[in-house]
Length: 299
Image (cartoon, rainbow, N blue to C red; front, top):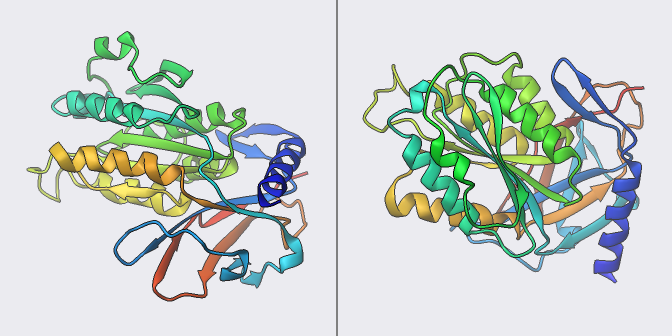
Protein backbone atom coordinates (compact mmCIF):
# COMPACT_ATOMS: atom_id res chain seq x y z
CA UNK A 1 0.00 0.00 0.00
CA UNK A 2 2.78 2.42 0.96
CA UNK A 3 4.68 1.73 -2.26
CA UNK A 4 1.53 2.23 -4.33
CA UNK A 5 0.83 5.47 -2.47
CA UNK A 6 4.33 6.81 -3.06
CA UNK A 7 4.12 5.92 -6.76
CA UNK A 8 0.83 7.81 -6.99
CA UNK A 9 2.43 10.84 -5.37
CA UNK A 10 5.30 10.68 -7.83
CA UNK A 11 2.86 10.64 -10.73
CA UNK A 12 1.01 13.58 -9.23
CA UNK A 13 4.26 15.46 -8.87
CA UNK A 14 5.29 14.84 -12.48
CA UNK A 15 1.84 15.82 -13.72
CA UNK A 16 1.89 18.97 -11.62
CA UNK A 17 5.06 20.34 -13.14
CA UNK A 18 3.47 22.88 -15.43
CA UNK A 19 6.27 25.19 -16.42
CA UNK A 20 9.97 25.82 -16.36
CA UNK A 21 11.11 29.40 -16.67
CA UNK A 22 14.50 31.03 -16.75
CA UNK A 23 14.77 34.23 -14.70
CA UNK A 24 18.24 35.66 -14.30
CA UNK A 25 19.77 32.18 -14.48
CA UNK A 26 17.43 30.64 -11.89
CA UNK A 27 15.52 27.48 -12.75
CA UNK A 28 11.95 27.68 -11.50
CA UNK A 29 9.46 24.81 -11.29
CA UNK A 30 5.75 25.30 -10.77
CA UNK A 31 4.37 22.35 -8.80
CA UNK A 32 1.47 21.53 -6.52
CA UNK A 33 3.55 19.39 -4.17
CA UNK A 34 6.64 20.08 -2.09
CA UNK A 35 8.90 17.04 -2.01
CA UNK A 36 11.46 16.62 0.77
CA UNK A 37 14.14 13.95 0.70
CA UNK A 38 15.38 13.46 4.26
CA UNK A 39 18.53 11.78 5.51
CA UNK A 40 18.18 10.45 9.06
CA UNK A 41 21.18 9.24 11.05
CA UNK A 42 21.96 8.38 14.63
CA UNK A 43 24.74 10.05 16.59
CA UNK A 44 27.30 7.66 15.09
CA UNK A 45 26.29 8.59 11.54
CA UNK A 46 24.47 5.32 10.74
CA UNK A 47 21.34 5.56 8.59
CA UNK A 48 18.11 4.90 10.46
CA UNK A 49 15.24 2.85 9.07
CA UNK A 50 11.84 2.01 10.51
CA UNK A 51 10.55 5.52 11.19
CA UNK A 52 6.90 6.42 10.60
CA UNK A 53 5.30 9.56 9.23
CA UNK A 54 4.19 10.44 12.76
CA UNK A 55 7.86 10.59 13.82
CA UNK A 56 8.36 13.69 11.66
CA UNK A 57 7.05 17.24 11.96
CA UNK A 58 7.45 19.57 8.97
CA UNK A 59 7.20 23.34 9.35
CA UNK A 60 6.77 25.80 6.50
CA UNK A 61 7.51 29.38 7.52
CA UNK A 62 7.06 28.24 11.12
CA UNK A 63 3.61 26.74 10.52
CA UNK A 64 3.27 23.00 11.02
CA UNK A 65 2.20 20.96 8.00
CA UNK A 66 -0.89 19.08 9.18
CA UNK A 67 -1.16 15.35 8.42
CA UNK A 68 -4.03 15.92 6.01
CA UNK A 69 -1.69 17.95 3.76
CA UNK A 70 0.84 15.12 3.47
CA UNK A 71 0.34 13.30 0.17
CA UNK A 72 2.91 10.55 0.74
CA UNK A 73 5.58 9.22 3.06
CA UNK A 74 8.06 6.49 2.21
CA UNK A 75 11.47 4.99 2.78
CA UNK A 76 12.70 3.29 -0.34
CA UNK A 77 15.95 2.58 -2.10
CA UNK A 78 14.73 4.24 -5.26
CA UNK A 79 16.81 5.26 -8.31
CA UNK A 80 18.52 8.63 -8.41
CA UNK A 81 19.93 10.91 -11.08
CA UNK A 82 23.13 12.80 -10.38
CA UNK A 83 25.26 15.38 -12.15
CA UNK A 84 28.97 15.35 -11.34
CA UNK A 85 30.64 18.76 -11.76
CA UNK A 86 34.41 18.65 -12.27
CA UNK A 87 36.26 21.91 -11.63
CA UNK A 88 38.81 22.16 -14.46
CA UNK A 89 39.89 25.77 -13.83
CA UNK A 90 43.51 26.82 -13.50
CA UNK A 91 43.43 26.80 -9.70
CA UNK A 92 42.77 23.05 -9.84
CA UNK A 93 45.83 22.18 -11.91
CA UNK A 94 47.59 20.29 -9.13
CA UNK A 95 44.41 18.50 -8.00
CA UNK A 96 42.50 17.80 -11.20
CA UNK A 97 43.80 14.25 -11.58
CA UNK A 98 42.55 13.53 -8.05
CA UNK A 99 39.17 15.11 -8.85
CA UNK A 100 38.85 12.97 -11.97
CA UNK A 101 39.68 9.86 -9.93
CA UNK A 102 37.01 10.90 -7.42
CA UNK A 103 34.44 11.14 -10.23
CA UNK A 104 35.37 7.63 -11.33
CA UNK A 105 34.92 6.45 -7.75
CA UNK A 106 31.42 7.95 -7.65
CA UNK A 107 30.46 6.29 -10.95
CA UNK A 108 31.72 3.00 -9.55
CA UNK A 109 29.13 3.35 -6.78
CA UNK A 110 26.14 3.64 -9.10
CA UNK A 111 23.57 0.91 -8.77
CA UNK A 112 22.02 -0.68 -11.83
CA UNK A 113 19.02 1.66 -11.80
CA UNK A 114 20.96 4.92 -11.11
CA UNK A 115 22.18 7.36 -13.76
CA UNK A 116 24.77 10.12 -13.78
CA UNK A 117 26.01 12.82 -16.15
CA UNK A 118 29.39 14.54 -15.96
CA UNK A 119 30.22 18.19 -16.69
CA UNK A 120 33.47 20.12 -16.46
CA UNK A 121 33.66 23.84 -15.74
CA UNK A 122 36.37 26.47 -16.08
CA UNK A 123 35.66 29.70 -17.97
CA UNK A 124 32.69 27.85 -19.46
CA UNK A 125 30.56 24.82 -18.60
CA UNK A 126 30.87 21.79 -20.89
CA UNK A 127 29.12 18.43 -20.94
CA UNK A 128 31.58 15.55 -20.73
CA UNK A 129 29.15 12.67 -20.44
CA UNK A 130 25.39 12.23 -20.96
CA UNK A 131 23.19 10.56 -18.37
CA UNK A 132 23.94 6.86 -18.30
CA UNK A 133 24.26 3.97 -15.91
CA UNK A 134 27.76 3.28 -17.17
CA UNK A 135 30.57 2.92 -14.66
CA UNK A 136 33.29 4.27 -16.94
CA UNK A 137 34.26 7.90 -17.37
CA UNK A 138 33.99 9.09 -20.99
CA UNK A 139 37.31 9.31 -22.90
CA UNK A 140 36.75 13.07 -23.28
CA UNK A 141 37.38 13.49 -19.54
CA UNK A 142 40.98 12.33 -19.93
CA UNK A 143 41.72 15.06 -22.48
CA UNK A 144 40.67 17.89 -20.14
CA UNK A 145 43.43 20.18 -18.90
CA UNK A 146 43.00 22.59 -16.00
CA UNK A 147 42.85 26.15 -17.32
CA UNK A 148 40.99 29.42 -17.18
CA UNK A 149 38.62 30.94 -14.64
CA UNK A 150 35.99 29.26 -12.42
CA UNK A 151 32.25 29.28 -13.21
CA UNK A 152 31.06 27.22 -10.24
CA UNK A 153 27.70 28.95 -9.81
CA UNK A 154 26.92 28.74 -13.52
CA UNK A 155 27.82 25.04 -13.46
CA UNK A 156 25.31 24.37 -10.66
CA UNK A 157 22.60 26.26 -12.56
CA UNK A 158 23.33 24.18 -15.68
CA UNK A 159 23.25 20.97 -13.65
CA UNK A 160 19.84 21.94 -12.24
CA UNK A 161 18.50 22.57 -15.74
CA UNK A 162 19.77 19.18 -16.82
CA UNK A 163 18.11 17.47 -13.85
CA UNK A 164 14.79 19.28 -14.33
CA UNK A 165 13.68 16.83 -17.02
CA UNK A 166 14.73 13.68 -15.18
CA UNK A 167 11.89 11.48 -13.83
CA UNK A 168 13.78 10.25 -10.75
CA UNK A 169 12.50 11.50 -7.37
CA UNK A 170 16.01 11.67 -5.94
CA UNK A 171 18.41 14.10 -7.57
CA UNK A 172 21.89 15.19 -6.63
CA UNK A 173 24.65 17.52 -7.79
CA UNK A 174 28.13 16.37 -6.82
CA UNK A 175 30.64 19.24 -6.94
CA UNK A 176 34.39 18.57 -7.00
CA UNK A 177 36.04 21.98 -6.62
CA UNK A 178 38.29 24.22 -4.56
CA UNK A 179 35.20 26.42 -4.26
CA UNK A 180 36.56 29.72 -5.54
CA UNK A 181 34.12 31.12 -8.13
CA UNK A 182 35.76 33.83 -10.24
CA UNK A 183 33.78 34.10 -13.48
CA UNK A 184 30.10 33.14 -13.10
CA UNK A 185 27.19 35.23 -14.29
CA UNK A 186 24.96 33.65 -11.65
CA UNK A 187 25.33 34.39 -7.94
CA UNK A 188 25.69 31.66 -5.34
CA UNK A 189 22.12 32.44 -4.19
CA UNK A 190 20.81 31.79 -7.70
CA UNK A 191 22.78 28.57 -7.86
CA UNK A 192 21.18 27.35 -4.63
CA UNK A 193 17.69 28.34 -5.77
CA UNK A 194 18.17 26.50 -9.04
CA UNK A 195 19.11 23.31 -7.22
CA UNK A 196 16.20 23.69 -4.79
CA UNK A 197 13.75 24.28 -7.64
CA UNK A 198 14.38 20.79 -9.02
CA UNK A 199 14.76 19.12 -5.62
CA UNK A 200 18.47 18.44 -6.00
CA UNK A 201 20.78 18.12 -3.01
CA UNK A 202 24.33 19.39 -3.46
CA UNK A 203 27.18 17.22 -2.24
CA UNK A 204 30.20 19.50 -2.21
CA UNK A 205 33.72 18.06 -2.04
CA UNK A 206 36.39 20.59 -1.12
CA UNK A 207 39.38 19.87 -3.36
CA UNK A 208 41.58 22.72 -2.07
CA UNK A 209 45.09 21.47 -1.18
CA UNK A 210 45.58 20.78 2.50
CA UNK A 211 48.90 22.58 2.71
CA UNK A 212 47.41 25.93 1.72
CA UNK A 213 46.70 28.19 4.69
CA UNK A 214 43.27 29.54 5.56
CA UNK A 215 44.09 33.03 4.34
CA UNK A 216 44.96 31.86 0.83
CA UNK A 217 43.33 28.68 -0.34
CA UNK A 218 40.49 28.00 2.09
CA UNK A 219 38.12 30.83 1.13
CA UNK A 220 36.11 28.50 -1.07
CA UNK A 221 35.18 26.07 1.72
CA UNK A 222 32.42 28.25 3.27
CA UNK A 223 30.68 28.59 -0.10
CA UNK A 224 30.81 24.86 -0.73
CA UNK A 225 29.56 24.18 2.80
CA UNK A 226 26.72 26.64 2.27
CA UNK A 227 25.62 24.90 -0.94
CA UNK A 228 25.42 21.60 0.90
CA UNK A 229 23.67 22.84 4.04
CA UNK A 230 21.00 24.85 2.21
CA UNK A 231 20.04 22.01 -0.13
CA UNK A 232 20.16 19.13 2.36
CA UNK A 233 23.32 17.61 0.93
CA UNK A 234 26.68 17.17 2.60
CA UNK A 235 30.01 18.99 2.69
CA UNK A 236 33.15 16.86 2.58
CA UNK A 237 36.46 18.41 3.54
CA UNK A 238 39.49 17.92 1.31
CA UNK A 239 39.71 14.14 0.88
CA UNK A 240 42.52 11.86 -0.12
CA UNK A 241 43.33 8.17 -0.24
CA UNK A 242 40.97 5.89 1.67
CA UNK A 243 39.06 8.89 3.07
CA UNK A 244 38.14 9.94 -0.46
CA UNK A 245 37.02 6.44 -1.39
CA UNK A 246 34.89 6.17 1.73
CA UNK A 247 33.35 9.61 1.12
CA UNK A 248 32.16 8.74 -2.36
CA UNK A 249 30.86 5.36 -1.32
CA UNK A 250 28.85 7.05 1.43
CA UNK A 251 27.33 9.64 -0.95
CA UNK A 252 26.07 6.93 -3.29
CA UNK A 253 24.77 4.92 -0.33
CA UNK A 254 22.99 7.91 1.20
CA UNK A 255 21.15 8.83 -1.97
CA UNK A 256 19.43 5.46 -1.97
CA UNK A 257 18.40 5.48 1.70
CA UNK A 258 16.40 8.64 2.24
CA UNK A 259 12.88 9.16 3.50
CA UNK A 260 10.58 11.11 1.20
CA UNK A 261 7.72 13.36 2.29
CA UNK A 262 5.50 15.04 -0.29
CA UNK A 263 2.98 17.59 0.91
CA UNK A 264 0.68 20.31 -0.34
CA UNK A 265 2.03 23.77 0.60
CA UNK A 266 0.65 25.45 3.69
CA UNK A 267 0.76 28.78 1.87
CA UNK A 268 -1.00 28.39 -1.50
CA UNK A 269 -0.07 31.86 -2.78
CA UNK A 270 1.85 31.89 -6.06
CA UNK A 271 3.87 34.94 -5.16
CA UNK A 272 7.40 33.76 -5.97
CA UNK A 273 8.48 34.28 -2.36
CA UNK A 274 10.88 32.17 -0.32
CA UNK A 275 9.38 29.60 2.06
CA UNK A 276 11.58 28.35 4.89
CA UNK A 277 11.42 24.66 5.79
CA UNK A 278 12.26 22.90 9.04
CA UNK A 279 11.89 19.24 9.93
CA UNK A 280 11.86 17.91 13.49
CA UNK A 281 11.99 14.35 14.79
CA UNK A 282 10.32 13.13 17.98
CA UNK A 283 13.58 11.40 18.94
CA UNK A 284 16.43 13.52 20.27
CA UNK A 285 19.00 10.82 19.54
CA UNK A 286 18.51 11.17 15.77
CA UNK A 287 19.63 13.81 13.29
CA UNK A 288 17.63 14.75 10.19
CA UNK A 289 19.03 16.61 7.19
CA UNK A 290 17.05 18.11 4.31
CA UNK A 291 16.77 21.31 2.29
CA UNK A 292 16.17 24.61 4.08
CA UNK A 293 13.40 25.96 1.87
CA UNK A 294 12.02 26.55 -1.60
CA UNK A 295 10.77 29.40 -3.72
CA UNK A 296 7.04 29.40 -4.35
CA UNK A 297 5.75 29.31 -7.93
CA UNK A 298 4.98 32.67 -9.49
CA UNK A 299 2.05 33.42 -11.69
